Amino acid sequence: MAAPDRPRFVVTSRLPGDGLKLLAEAGEVVAFDREAPLPRSELLAAIAGATVVLTMLTDRVDEEFFAAAGPGLRAVANVAVGHDNIDLDAAARHGVAVTNTPGVLDDATADLALALILGASRRIAEADRLVRRGEPWEWGMSFMLGRDLRGKTLGIVGLGGIGRCVAARARGFGMEIAYSSRNPAPAEVTAALAAERVPLDALLETADVLTLHCPLTPETHHLIGAAELARMKPTALLVNTARGAVVDEAALVEALRAGTIAAAGLDVFEQEPNVHPGLLGLDNVTLVPHLGSATIETRSAMAELAARNALAAARGEPLPTPVRLPGPSDGPADAP
Image (cartoon, rainbow, N blue to C red; front, side, top):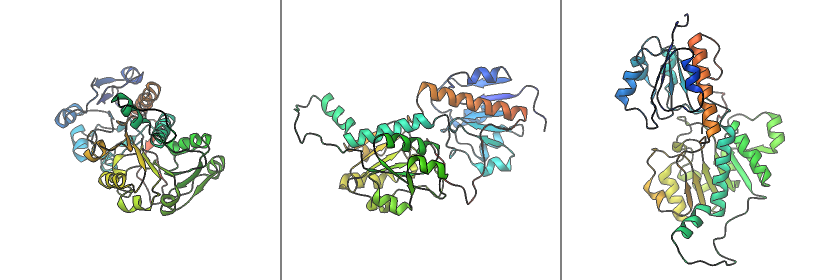
C-alpha cells in the first residue's frame, strides 16, 4: 500500500528532544503536551484517522484501540523497549506494525539498576531517612552495617542489552556474574563478562544480588513469588527495573518482613503508580518511581528513535526497530 501524501501522527504524551520536529517536517502532528496518560475516551477519539500513533507504556493498545484508529493506521511506535501494553496479536490481525526503542536506554537503566544495588547493599535510603528525621546518631563499628559487593555473585535474569550493561558495571565492582535465560547469550558476550549460564533455580540459590531484566509476558508474570524468594539466601538482595508484575509484591512484602531475603530495590511496581502499602513501611526496600530511562539524554534519544520508526512506517520504508510476535525459541529481552 502506498504511503499517504500527508501522514497524520498522533503523540499521546509529552515528547522531549527533536522527535516532534522530525514528525512535523513530514506530516500533520497531533501531540498532547502532558505527562499523565490520556483518559481512554480522549485517546480513542484522538487516534481516529491516524497514520502512526506514538504511544507510551501507560497506553493500552488493544482491539478497541485499533478499531478506533481505523484502517489507515500503519504502525504503533511505542516510546519504550517493553511492549507489554500492546496486544501484538491484535496488531497483526489489523496489519499494524509495532516498533519500540531498544538500545538507546540500556546504559541509563543499567546505571539505575546499579544505583539500586548499591542503595540496598549499603542502606543508603534508610540512612537518608534517619538523618532527615533528626534522630541522634554517632559513628560506631556496628552502626548501620551494609554488605560489600566485591566477590559476591550477581544473578541476572535476562542477559539482553540492559542485563549486559549491568553485568559490565558489576564487574567493575568485583562481582561474579551468573545469568538465567531460555537461550544462551553469544559466546563473545559471556566471555567478556565471564558470565556463567545456570538454571533459574540455581541462580536463585546462589545469587547474592538478583537483578531482573526480562520482559513481562504470561510466562514471566510473578516469575519471582513466594517459592522463588524462599530459595534465595537470607542475605540476598532483589532488584527489579524490568516490569513490576514480574515480582509478586505481596510475597515480596512477606519475605522482607520475615527476613527471607535481606533487602530489595524496586523501580517498577505491579499497579503503577500505586505501590503495595506493605512496602511503604519497610526500611529494607528502596523505592523509585520508574526512573530507569529517566535522563535527559536517554529520553530524548528514545523520542527520536520512536519518531524515526514512525516516519519509516508512514513512508513504507523498513522499520529501524520493529517488534515481532515472539516465537517459542526466543530468548530474553530487556524491559525498562
